[in-house]
Image (cartoon, rainbow, N blue to C red; front, side, top):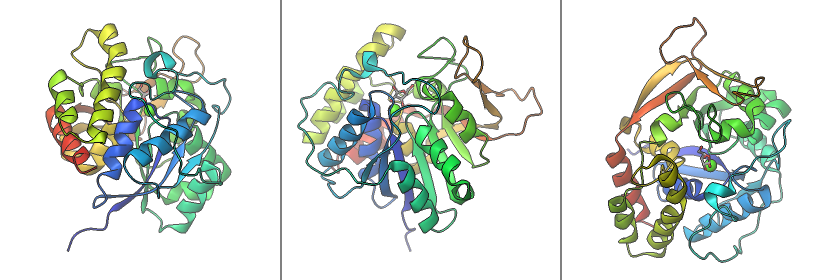
Length: 315
Ligand code: BDR
Ligand code: CA
């Protein structure tokens, strides 16, 4: 007998790489049941991230997916955005039409709380792909739901790669370090996809052309998103292609054997102006601080792109 699909909530700030993650999840209904998508301010302001989430659902032909708008700014700091990477809309690249599916009325934080209360304890996995503001806000507002989360699998942080938005910090953690600190201290099992692994998942020409060659609207749009998104990192790092960060989270849920890491302690810097948002990861086990996260360090990049391409072909 086949297993029931795993229930997930995708918390996101699309972003082209977020869009790939959403498409990968929606293309995998036998493995993943997307209970809802909660938008948060991050790569671009909230009005655009919730719109972009709906655009991606419609591209996948899934007008039925519930999309909620969440927090429009970090817990205590002004919002920092990343139009320099993702373009003005967050989904720059191909021409996209305005979505027609409605935004849900409830606030994303209330949806997170109500869903975690309604579903069986330990049955819902949270997949944050942006700043952790919505997740921390739900935990603050309803501490009873913390123990009901099965697992958090998130994209954020870095150890060996250190930072991308500052020399010391990765974007998602940097934007809302207080939220990240609260989530990492919450006691929920956490899997982290840091830059150390996402920087190995590069949109080489051959990989992008395979996606374009799918010949579908999804394949065309996804390839054009990759074309646009990679230019920033290609110029910065001199790599062939850019890192496809966020779909690593969904790929891990689908095929964890593609990834390897270590169960370690990870603390978030919230005080220092110089290293704000740094994920201080005890990769080498030099402290006696308690392990609180499975920190991924390596990936079978070709296996990842084979999975992504095969799943996108279904849409
Ligand atoms: C992360 O920041 C965003 O720009 C991407 O969508 C990804 O979630 C990478 O640092
Ligand atoms: Ca993101």
